[in-house]
Length: 500
Image (tube, rainbow, N blue to C red; front, side):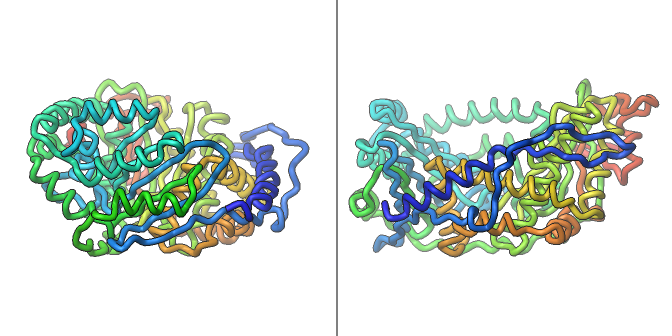
Protein backbone atom coordinates (compact mmCIF):
# COMPACT_ATOMS: atom_id res chain seq x y z
CA UNK A 1 0.00 0.00 0.00
CA UNK A 2 2.52 2.60 1.11
CA UNK A 3 5.04 1.92 -1.62
CA UNK A 4 3.14 4.08 -4.13
CA UNK A 5 2.19 6.93 -1.82
CA UNK A 6 5.17 9.33 -2.42
CA UNK A 7 4.79 8.99 -6.20
CA UNK A 8 1.04 9.52 -5.99
CA UNK A 9 1.24 12.60 -3.77
CA UNK A 10 3.99 14.16 -5.89
CA UNK A 11 2.02 13.57 -9.07
CA UNK A 12 -1.23 14.80 -7.58
CA UNK A 13 0.43 17.98 -6.39
CA UNK A 14 1.39 18.73 -9.96
CA UNK A 15 -2.04 17.78 -11.26
CA UNK A 16 -3.87 19.87 -8.65
CA UNK A 17 -2.02 22.93 -9.89
CA UNK A 18 -4.12 22.59 -13.01
CA UNK A 19 -7.19 23.83 -11.17
CA UNK A 20 -5.95 27.34 -11.82
CA UNK A 21 -6.90 26.79 -15.43
CA UNK A 22 -10.01 24.69 -14.96
CA UNK A 23 -12.15 27.70 -16.00
CA UNK A 24 -10.61 28.71 -19.32
CA UNK A 25 -11.08 31.95 -21.22
CA UNK A 26 -11.93 32.13 -24.88
CA UNK A 27 -11.22 34.75 -27.48
CA UNK A 28 -13.52 33.02 -29.97
CA UNK A 29 -16.03 35.20 -31.76
CA UNK A 30 -19.63 34.07 -31.63
CA UNK A 31 -22.16 34.48 -34.44
CA UNK A 32 -22.69 38.14 -35.38
CA UNK A 33 -19.32 38.95 -33.81
CA UNK A 34 -20.43 38.62 -30.20
CA UNK A 35 -17.47 38.18 -27.83
CA UNK A 36 -17.90 35.16 -25.56
CA UNK A 37 -15.58 36.03 -22.66
CA UNK A 38 -13.04 38.60 -21.56
CA UNK A 39 -11.68 36.55 -18.67
CA UNK A 40 -7.88 36.48 -18.57
CA UNK A 41 -5.93 33.82 -16.67
CA UNK A 42 -2.40 34.44 -15.48
CA UNK A 43 0.28 32.31 -13.81
CA UNK A 44 -0.75 29.24 -15.79
CA UNK A 45 0.72 25.99 -14.52
CA UNK A 46 3.09 24.43 -17.07
CA UNK A 47 2.03 20.90 -17.92
CA UNK A 48 3.77 18.26 -19.99
CA UNK A 49 3.35 14.54 -20.39
CA UNK A 50 5.77 13.76 -17.56
CA UNK A 51 3.66 15.85 -15.17
CA UNK A 52 0.55 13.99 -16.23
CA UNK A 53 1.94 10.56 -15.38
CA UNK A 54 0.64 9.09 -12.13
CA UNK A 55 0.82 5.71 -10.46
CA UNK A 56 -2.30 5.23 -8.41
CA UNK A 57 -2.60 2.82 -5.49
CA UNK A 58 -3.92 -0.45 -6.85
CA UNK A 59 -6.63 -2.46 -5.11
CA UNK A 60 -6.16 -6.02 -4.01
CA UNK A 61 -8.61 -8.15 -6.01
CA UNK A 62 -9.59 -11.67 -5.05
CA UNK A 63 -12.46 -14.05 -5.72
CA UNK A 64 -14.10 -16.10 -2.99
CA UNK A 65 -14.92 -19.77 -3.64
CA UNK A 66 -18.60 -18.90 -4.20
CA UNK A 67 -17.67 -16.53 -7.06
CA UNK A 68 -17.90 -13.18 -5.24
CA UNK A 69 -15.26 -10.72 -6.43
CA UNK A 70 -13.73 -8.71 -3.55
CA UNK A 71 -11.82 -5.50 -4.19
CA UNK A 72 -9.86 -3.80 -1.37
CA UNK A 73 -8.34 -0.33 -1.80
CA UNK A 74 -6.29 0.60 1.26
CA UNK A 75 -6.36 4.34 2.07
CA UNK A 76 -5.19 5.04 5.61
CA UNK A 77 -5.48 8.83 5.61
CA UNK A 78 -8.77 8.86 7.57
CA UNK A 79 -10.31 6.33 10.00
CA UNK A 80 -13.25 5.64 7.68
CA UNK A 81 -14.44 3.05 5.17
CA UNK A 82 -16.64 3.17 2.07
CA UNK A 83 -18.16 -0.16 1.03
CA UNK A 84 -20.04 -0.93 -2.18
CA UNK A 85 -21.82 -4.13 -3.07
CA UNK A 86 -22.54 -3.88 -6.78
CA UNK A 87 -24.93 -6.33 -8.39
CA UNK A 88 -24.44 -6.72 -12.13
CA UNK A 89 -28.13 -6.31 -12.93
CA UNK A 90 -30.25 -3.16 -12.86
CA UNK A 91 -33.40 -1.65 -14.31
CA UNK A 92 -32.21 -2.46 -17.84
CA UNK A 93 -33.32 -6.02 -17.02
CA UNK A 94 -36.83 -5.13 -15.84
CA UNK A 95 -39.71 -7.14 -17.31
CA UNK A 96 -41.61 -5.00 -19.85
CA UNK A 97 -44.80 -5.22 -17.81
CA UNK A 98 -43.03 -4.20 -14.56
CA UNK A 99 -40.79 -1.19 -15.29
CA UNK A 100 -38.95 -0.27 -12.13
CA UNK A 101 -38.73 -3.78 -10.65
CA UNK A 102 -34.96 -3.63 -10.07
CA UNK A 103 -35.40 -0.27 -8.34
CA UNK A 104 -38.31 -1.55 -6.25
CA UNK A 105 -36.22 -4.54 -5.21
CA UNK A 106 -33.23 -2.40 -4.23
CA UNK A 107 -35.38 0.09 -2.32
CA UNK A 108 -37.12 -2.67 -0.38
CA UNK A 109 -33.83 -4.15 0.85
CA UNK A 110 -33.77 -1.53 3.60
CA UNK A 111 -37.37 -2.17 4.62
CA UNK A 112 -36.60 -5.18 6.76
CA UNK A 113 -34.76 -8.49 6.74
CA UNK A 114 -35.40 -11.92 8.23
CA UNK A 115 -33.33 -10.75 11.23
CA UNK A 116 -34.25 -7.07 11.58
CA UNK A 117 -37.35 -4.96 11.03
CA UNK A 118 -37.08 -1.72 9.08
CA UNK A 119 -36.95 0.30 12.30
CA UNK A 120 -34.33 -2.02 13.83
CA UNK A 121 -32.17 -1.57 10.74
CA UNK A 122 -32.42 2.20 11.08
CA UNK A 123 -31.47 2.02 14.76
CA UNK A 124 -28.46 -0.22 14.09
CA UNK A 125 -27.20 2.04 11.30
CA UNK A 126 -27.57 5.15 13.44
CA UNK A 127 -25.91 3.46 16.42
CA UNK A 128 -22.79 2.92 14.30
CA UNK A 129 -22.86 6.47 12.96
CA UNK A 130 -22.98 4.86 9.52
CA UNK A 131 -24.90 5.43 6.29
CA UNK A 132 -26.48 2.74 4.14
CA UNK A 133 -28.57 3.08 1.01
CA UNK A 134 -29.67 0.84 -1.84
CA UNK A 135 -30.45 1.89 -5.39
CA UNK A 136 -30.99 0.82 -9.00
CA UNK A 137 -31.38 3.68 -11.44
CA UNK A 138 -33.29 3.57 -14.71
CA UNK A 139 -30.90 3.02 -17.58
CA UNK A 140 -28.33 1.35 -15.33
CA UNK A 141 -27.07 -2.19 -15.76
CA UNK A 142 -26.35 -2.55 -12.02
CA UNK A 143 -27.87 -2.25 -8.55
CA UNK A 144 -25.91 -1.14 -5.50
CA UNK A 145 -25.82 -1.31 -1.74
CA UNK A 146 -23.55 1.46 -0.47
CA UNK A 147 -22.43 2.02 3.12
CA UNK A 148 -19.87 4.13 4.94
CA UNK A 149 -18.73 4.70 8.49
CA UNK A 150 -15.81 4.53 10.87
CA UNK A 151 -13.21 1.87 10.18
CA UNK A 152 -13.59 0.59 13.76
CA UNK A 153 -17.11 -0.49 12.74
CA UNK A 154 -16.08 -2.25 9.52
CA UNK A 155 -17.19 -5.69 10.67
CA UNK A 156 -20.61 -4.46 11.86
CA UNK A 157 -21.21 -2.43 8.68
CA UNK A 158 -20.29 -5.43 6.56
CA UNK A 159 -22.75 -7.57 8.52
CA UNK A 160 -25.50 -5.00 7.86
CA UNK A 161 -24.76 -5.03 4.13
CA UNK A 162 -24.84 -8.83 4.10
CA UNK A 163 -28.14 -8.87 5.98
CA UNK A 164 -30.00 -6.43 3.70
CA UNK A 165 -28.55 -7.88 0.50
CA UNK A 166 -28.91 -11.59 1.31
CA UNK A 167 -31.89 -11.74 3.69
CA UNK A 168 -34.57 -9.22 2.68
CA UNK A 169 -38.00 -10.08 4.08
CA UNK A 170 -40.07 -8.23 1.43
CA UNK A 171 -42.97 -8.08 3.87
CA UNK A 172 -46.41 -7.23 2.49
CA UNK A 173 -46.95 -4.52 5.10
CA UNK A 174 -43.75 -2.69 4.15
CA UNK A 175 -44.47 -3.15 0.45
CA UNK A 176 -47.92 -1.55 0.83
CA UNK A 177 -46.39 1.49 2.52
CA UNK A 178 -43.68 1.64 -0.13
CA UNK A 179 -46.25 1.58 -2.95
CA UNK A 180 -48.13 4.51 -1.43
CA UNK A 181 -44.91 6.54 -1.29
CA UNK A 182 -43.95 5.58 -4.82
CA UNK A 183 -47.31 6.57 -6.31
CA UNK A 184 -47.03 9.96 -4.65
CA UNK A 185 -43.43 10.35 -5.86
CA UNK A 186 -44.41 9.37 -9.40
CA UNK A 187 -47.17 11.98 -9.52
CA UNK A 188 -44.70 14.61 -8.36
CA UNK A 189 -42.05 13.44 -10.83
CA UNK A 190 -44.43 13.57 -13.79
CA UNK A 191 -45.23 17.18 -12.96
CA UNK A 192 -41.59 18.19 -13.54
CA UNK A 193 -40.59 19.35 -17.03
CA UNK A 194 -37.11 17.82 -16.81
CA UNK A 195 -38.65 14.38 -16.15
CA UNK A 196 -40.99 14.74 -19.13
CA UNK A 197 -38.11 15.85 -21.35
CA UNK A 198 -35.90 12.98 -20.20
CA UNK A 199 -38.69 10.45 -20.75
CA UNK A 200 -39.54 11.60 -24.28
CA UNK A 201 -35.85 11.93 -25.24
CA UNK A 202 -35.02 8.36 -24.23
CA UNK A 203 -38.11 7.04 -25.98
CA UNK A 204 -37.14 8.91 -29.15
CA UNK A 205 -33.56 7.68 -28.96
CA UNK A 206 -33.95 4.05 -27.90
CA UNK A 207 -37.35 2.91 -29.19
CA UNK A 208 -37.98 -0.62 -27.83
CA UNK A 209 -34.53 -0.93 -26.26
CA UNK A 210 -34.73 -1.13 -22.42
CA UNK A 211 -32.94 2.23 -21.96
CA UNK A 212 -36.04 3.95 -23.34
CA UNK A 213 -37.74 3.56 -19.94
CA UNK A 214 -36.98 6.32 -17.42
CA UNK A 215 -39.92 6.12 -15.01
CA UNK A 216 -42.09 3.40 -13.50
CA UNK A 217 -45.79 3.40 -14.34
CA UNK A 218 -48.62 3.64 -11.85
CA UNK A 219 -49.63 0.13 -12.95
CA UNK A 220 -46.18 -1.32 -12.31
CA UNK A 221 -46.18 0.21 -8.82
CA UNK A 222 -49.69 -1.04 -8.03
CA UNK A 223 -49.14 -4.51 -9.48
CA UNK A 224 -45.70 -5.44 -8.11
CA UNK A 225 -45.90 -8.23 -5.55
CA UNK A 226 -43.64 -9.60 -2.88
CA UNK A 227 -43.29 -12.63 -5.16
CA UNK A 228 -41.96 -10.42 -7.99
CA UNK A 229 -39.40 -8.89 -5.64
CA UNK A 230 -38.26 -12.25 -4.31
CA UNK A 231 -38.01 -13.76 -7.78
CA UNK A 232 -35.87 -10.86 -9.06
CA UNK A 233 -33.71 -10.93 -5.95
CA UNK A 234 -33.13 -14.69 -5.99
CA UNK A 235 -32.25 -14.67 -9.68
CA UNK A 236 -29.83 -11.74 -9.76
CA UNK A 237 -28.52 -11.20 -6.22
CA UNK A 238 -26.00 -14.02 -6.43
CA UNK A 239 -22.26 -13.94 -5.66
CA UNK A 240 -21.04 -14.59 -9.19
CA UNK A 241 -23.03 -11.51 -10.31
CA UNK A 242 -21.56 -9.21 -7.66
CA UNK A 243 -18.53 -7.15 -6.72
CA UNK A 244 -17.87 -6.21 -3.10
CA UNK A 245 -15.49 -3.25 -2.92
CA UNK A 246 -14.08 -1.37 0.05
CA UNK A 247 -11.94 1.73 0.19
CA UNK A 248 -10.48 3.24 3.33
CA UNK A 249 -8.65 2.45 6.53
CA UNK A 250 -8.62 -1.34 6.23
CA UNK A 251 -6.04 -4.07 5.78
CA UNK A 252 -6.73 -6.23 2.75
CA UNK A 253 -6.07 -9.56 4.43
CA UNK A 254 -8.31 -8.77 7.39
CA UNK A 255 -11.14 -7.43 5.23
CA UNK A 256 -11.12 -10.46 2.94
CA UNK A 257 -11.42 -12.71 5.99
CA UNK A 258 -14.41 -10.64 7.19
CA UNK A 259 -15.97 -11.12 3.75
CA UNK A 260 -15.55 -14.89 3.99
CA UNK A 261 -17.47 -14.86 7.27
CA UNK A 262 -20.23 -12.50 6.12
CA UNK A 263 -20.68 -13.71 2.54
CA UNK A 264 -19.03 -17.14 2.36
CA UNK A 265 -22.33 -19.05 2.60
CA UNK A 266 -23.99 -16.93 -0.11
CA UNK A 267 -24.99 -19.12 -3.04
CA UNK A 268 -26.91 -18.81 -6.30
CA UNK A 269 -26.97 -19.93 -9.91
CA UNK A 270 -24.75 -18.06 -12.39
CA UNK A 271 -26.39 -15.17 -14.27
CA UNK A 272 -25.94 -15.14 -18.06
CA UNK A 273 -24.20 -12.02 -19.31
CA UNK A 274 -26.79 -9.84 -21.10
CA UNK A 275 -26.11 -8.64 -24.62
CA UNK A 276 -26.69 -4.88 -24.90
CA UNK A 277 -25.22 -4.55 -28.39
CA UNK A 278 -28.50 -4.65 -30.32
CA UNK A 279 -29.44 -0.98 -30.33
CA UNK A 280 -32.12 0.26 -32.72
CA UNK A 281 -30.74 1.96 -35.82
CA UNK A 282 -30.43 5.73 -35.25
CA UNK A 283 -33.74 7.44 -36.01
CA UNK A 284 -33.97 10.31 -38.47
CA UNK A 285 -33.66 13.76 -36.92
CA UNK A 286 -36.90 14.92 -35.34
CA UNK A 287 -38.25 17.44 -32.85
CA UNK A 288 -40.65 16.35 -30.11
CA UNK A 289 -42.75 19.00 -28.39
CA UNK A 290 -44.31 18.03 -25.07
CA UNK A 291 -47.13 20.51 -24.62
CA UNK A 292 -47.17 21.56 -20.97
CA UNK A 293 -49.75 24.35 -20.56
CA UNK A 294 -48.79 27.35 -18.42
CA UNK A 295 -45.06 26.58 -18.55
CA UNK A 296 -43.08 29.82 -18.35
CA UNK A 297 -40.02 28.31 -19.95
CA UNK A 298 -39.01 25.72 -22.54
CA UNK A 299 -36.85 22.80 -21.46
CA UNK A 300 -34.72 21.70 -24.39
CA UNK A 301 -32.81 18.41 -24.67
CA UNK A 302 -30.93 17.38 -27.80
CA UNK A 303 -28.65 14.45 -28.49
CA UNK A 304 -27.91 11.05 -29.94
CA UNK A 305 -26.16 7.82 -29.01
CA UNK A 306 -22.87 8.30 -27.19
CA UNK A 307 -19.95 5.89 -26.78
CA UNK A 308 -19.28 2.95 -24.50
CA UNK A 309 -16.47 3.40 -21.99
CA UNK A 310 -14.58 0.67 -23.83
CA UNK A 311 -14.85 2.35 -27.24
CA UNK A 312 -11.57 3.68 -28.60
CA UNK A 313 -12.95 7.18 -29.15
CA UNK A 314 -14.56 7.51 -25.71
CA UNK A 315 -11.88 9.88 -24.40
CA UNK A 316 -12.08 11.99 -27.58
CA UNK A 317 -15.83 12.27 -26.97
CA UNK A 318 -15.20 13.37 -23.38
CA UNK A 319 -12.83 16.11 -24.55
CA UNK A 320 -15.24 17.19 -27.29
CA UNK A 321 -18.03 17.38 -24.74
CA UNK A 322 -15.93 19.52 -22.39
CA UNK A 323 -15.33 22.02 -25.19
CA UNK A 324 -18.96 22.09 -26.24
CA UNK A 325 -20.96 21.94 -23.03
CA UNK A 326 -19.02 20.36 -20.17
CA UNK A 327 -19.30 23.28 -17.75
CA UNK A 328 -19.62 27.05 -17.36
CA UNK A 329 -16.40 27.52 -19.35
CA UNK A 330 -17.80 25.72 -22.39
CA UNK A 331 -19.33 27.06 -25.59
CA UNK A 332 -22.99 26.38 -24.88
CA UNK A 333 -22.90 28.16 -21.53
CA UNK A 334 -20.93 31.13 -22.82
CA UNK A 335 -23.19 31.47 -25.84
CA UNK A 336 -26.68 31.00 -24.43
CA UNK A 337 -26.06 32.57 -21.04
CA UNK A 338 -23.16 35.00 -21.23
CA UNK A 339 -23.67 36.34 -24.75
CA UNK A 340 -27.42 36.07 -25.28
CA UNK A 341 -28.84 35.93 -21.73
CA UNK A 342 -31.32 33.25 -22.77
CA UNK A 343 -30.82 31.00 -19.74
CA UNK A 344 -29.10 30.47 -16.41
CA UNK A 345 -27.13 27.59 -17.88
CA UNK A 346 -26.60 25.34 -20.88
CA UNK A 347 -24.63 22.12 -20.73
CA UNK A 348 -23.94 18.80 -22.41
CA UNK A 349 -22.99 15.44 -20.94
CA UNK A 350 -21.78 11.96 -21.78
CA UNK A 351 -22.46 8.77 -19.88
CA UNK A 352 -20.75 5.40 -19.79
CA UNK A 353 -22.14 1.94 -19.38
CA UNK A 354 -22.12 -1.43 -21.11
CA UNK A 355 -24.25 0.10 -23.87
CA UNK A 356 -24.00 3.57 -25.47
CA UNK A 357 -25.69 6.01 -23.12
CA UNK A 358 -26.71 9.32 -24.68
CA UNK A 359 -24.58 12.24 -25.58
CA UNK A 360 -27.03 15.05 -24.77
CA UNK A 361 -27.18 18.83 -24.47
CA UNK A 362 -29.77 20.57 -22.31
CA UNK A 363 -30.94 24.02 -21.32
CA UNK A 364 -34.01 25.75 -19.88
CA UNK A 365 -34.94 29.04 -21.52
CA UNK A 366 -37.68 31.67 -21.37
CA UNK A 367 -40.58 30.94 -23.71
CA UNK A 368 -39.94 34.04 -25.77
CA UNK A 369 -36.37 33.03 -26.64
CA UNK A 370 -37.10 29.44 -27.69
CA UNK A 371 -36.42 30.37 -31.32
CA UNK A 372 -33.11 32.08 -30.58
CA UNK A 373 -32.02 29.24 -28.32
CA UNK A 374 -32.69 26.63 -30.98
CA UNK A 375 -30.76 28.75 -33.47
CA UNK A 376 -27.73 29.04 -31.19
CA UNK A 377 -27.77 25.35 -30.23
CA UNK A 378 -27.75 24.40 -33.90
CA UNK A 379 -25.00 26.95 -34.55
CA UNK A 380 -22.78 25.40 -31.85
CA UNK A 381 -23.52 21.85 -32.98
CA UNK A 382 -22.48 22.73 -36.53
CA UNK A 383 -19.42 24.67 -35.41
CA UNK A 384 -18.00 21.82 -33.30
CA UNK A 385 -18.42 19.53 -36.31
CA UNK A 386 -17.22 21.85 -39.08
CA UNK A 387 -14.33 23.70 -37.43
CA UNK A 388 -11.33 22.28 -35.63
CA UNK A 389 -11.10 23.46 -32.03
CA UNK A 390 -8.32 26.08 -31.69
CA UNK A 391 -5.32 24.82 -29.76
CA UNK A 392 -5.73 27.19 -26.81
CA UNK A 393 -9.37 26.25 -26.31
CA UNK A 394 -8.54 22.56 -26.69
CA UNK A 395 -5.63 22.83 -24.26
CA UNK A 396 -7.85 24.50 -21.66
CA UNK A 397 -10.48 21.78 -22.02
CA UNK A 398 -7.90 19.02 -21.57
CA UNK A 399 -6.44 20.76 -18.51
CA UNK A 400 -9.89 21.16 -17.01
CA UNK A 401 -10.63 17.44 -17.38
CA UNK A 402 -7.30 16.44 -15.83
CA UNK A 403 -7.79 18.93 -12.98
CA UNK A 404 -11.22 17.47 -12.21
CA UNK A 405 -9.77 13.99 -12.36
CA UNK A 406 -7.00 14.94 -9.92
CA UNK A 407 -9.48 16.39 -7.44
CA UNK A 408 -11.63 13.26 -7.64
CA UNK A 409 -8.70 11.08 -6.57
CA UNK A 410 -8.80 12.64 -3.12
CA UNK A 411 -12.27 11.14 -2.59
CA UNK A 412 -12.12 7.48 -1.65
CA UNK A 413 -15.63 6.83 -2.95
CA UNK A 414 -14.71 8.25 -6.38
CA UNK A 415 -11.51 6.25 -6.63
CA UNK A 416 -13.31 3.10 -5.54
CA UNK A 417 -15.96 3.64 -8.22
CA UNK A 418 -13.25 3.96 -10.85
CA UNK A 419 -11.74 0.61 -9.91
CA UNK A 420 -15.15 -1.05 -9.94
CA UNK A 421 -15.42 0.17 -13.55
CA UNK A 422 -12.10 -1.53 -14.30
CA UNK A 423 -13.59 -4.83 -13.10
CA UNK A 424 -16.98 -4.43 -14.77
CA UNK A 425 -15.60 -3.35 -18.16
CA UNK A 426 -12.48 -5.53 -17.98
CA UNK A 427 -10.26 -2.48 -18.51
CA UNK A 428 -6.46 -2.64 -18.24
CA UNK A 429 -5.21 -2.47 -14.64
CA UNK A 430 -3.36 0.77 -15.40
CA UNK A 431 -6.33 2.42 -17.19
CA UNK A 432 -6.59 5.28 -14.69
CA UNK A 433 -2.81 5.74 -14.56
CA UNK A 434 -2.86 6.38 -18.32
CA UNK A 435 -6.08 8.39 -18.38
CA UNK A 436 -4.54 11.87 -17.80
CA UNK A 437 -1.90 11.27 -20.47
CA UNK A 438 -4.47 10.10 -23.00
CA UNK A 439 -6.63 13.14 -22.30
CA UNK A 440 -3.59 15.38 -22.67
CA UNK A 441 -2.71 13.80 -26.01
CA UNK A 442 -6.19 14.16 -27.54
CA UNK A 443 -5.83 16.13 -30.77
CA UNK A 444 -8.09 18.60 -32.55
CA UNK A 445 -8.52 16.03 -35.32
CA UNK A 446 -9.73 13.42 -32.83
CA UNK A 447 -12.15 15.91 -31.25
CA UNK A 448 -13.58 16.85 -34.63
CA UNK A 449 -13.94 13.18 -35.58
CA UNK A 450 -15.86 12.56 -32.34
CA UNK A 451 -18.08 15.58 -33.02
CA UNK A 452 -18.87 14.43 -36.55
CA UNK A 453 -19.71 10.95 -35.29
CA UNK A 454 -21.73 11.75 -32.17
CA UNK A 455 -23.19 15.21 -32.88
CA UNK A 456 -24.99 13.64 -35.81
CA UNK A 457 -27.26 16.29 -37.30
CA UNK A 458 -29.03 13.75 -39.51
CA UNK A 459 -30.09 11.73 -36.46
CA UNK A 460 -30.21 14.37 -33.73
CA UNK A 461 -33.27 14.05 -31.48
CA UNK A 462 -34.68 17.26 -29.98
CA UNK A 463 -37.22 17.34 -27.15
CA UNK A 464 -38.80 20.60 -26.03
CA UNK A 465 -41.15 20.75 -23.04
CA UNK A 466 -43.20 23.93 -22.86
CA UNK A 467 -46.48 25.65 -23.58
CA UNK A 468 -47.02 25.10 -27.30
CA UNK A 469 -49.27 28.17 -27.65
CA UNK A 470 -46.92 30.67 -26.01
CA UNK A 471 -44.90 33.08 -28.21
CA UNK A 472 -41.48 31.60 -28.93
CA UNK A 473 -39.88 34.72 -30.41
CA UNK A 474 -40.35 38.48 -30.75
CA UNK A 475 -42.48 37.97 -33.86
CA UNK A 476 -45.21 36.49 -31.67
CA UNK A 477 -44.96 33.09 -33.38
CA UNK A 478 -46.01 30.24 -31.12
CA UNK A 479 -43.47 27.74 -29.86
CA UNK A 480 -45.18 25.10 -31.97
CA UNK A 481 -44.67 27.20 -35.11
CA UNK A 482 -41.13 28.21 -34.15
CA UNK A 483 -39.97 24.60 -33.86
CA UNK A 484 -41.19 23.78 -37.36
CA UNK A 485 -38.34 25.93 -38.69
CA UNK A 486 -35.85 23.38 -37.41
CA UNK A 487 -37.37 20.10 -38.58
CA UNK A 488 -40.27 17.70 -38.39
CA UNK A 489 -42.27 18.21 -35.19
CA UNK A 490 -44.38 15.71 -33.25
CA UNK A 491 -46.52 17.02 -30.38
CA UNK A 492 -47.42 15.05 -27.22
CA UNK A 493 -49.29 15.87 -24.04
CA UNK A 494 -47.76 15.37 -20.61
CA UNK A 495 -49.23 11.87 -20.39
CA UNK A 496 -47.40 10.76 -23.53
CA UNK A 497 -50.41 10.88 -25.85
CA UNK A 498 -49.63 12.13 -29.34
CA UNK A 499 -51.62 15.16 -30.49
CA UNK A 500 -52.69 15.93 -34.05
